[in-house]
Length: 178
Image (cartoon, rainbow, N blue to C red; front, side, top):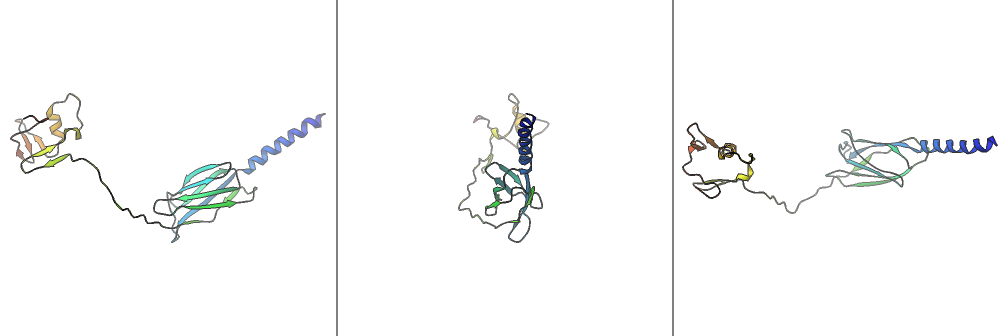
């Protein structure tokens, strides 16, 4: 009767050790076509049991510390290089796997068109300079002089005169009013 209890227990312990041994360390290096390491490349390992992501260090090395499956795919991608997918099938008992170097080929991306969008904060006209007040952060109920102090080239002297680039401002318009 004792053996009937001991045998299933031993089988269960053996299964736990087998699962523990199935976890492995997978590492490698990513290089360019000249042989220089590629730092900061994204490395993805995908298998039936795992989906892991890491980045290469400054020397191009990567490491996955707890990979469960011996059959997996490694995808490496980095800006300026063509993405590479490699499939691996290893012996299930190996605890550490050092993969052969993965070489990425350079990929030049040419842009057809670049659009830059923005709004103009300061507009210079022949005798007028226009500022957009919403471009400057001030407290909700601050006085106008707090806004003026933040505008480039605009100063308020001790007499309260508004100066722009060293010249006195004769007229100022706020919200369309003089």
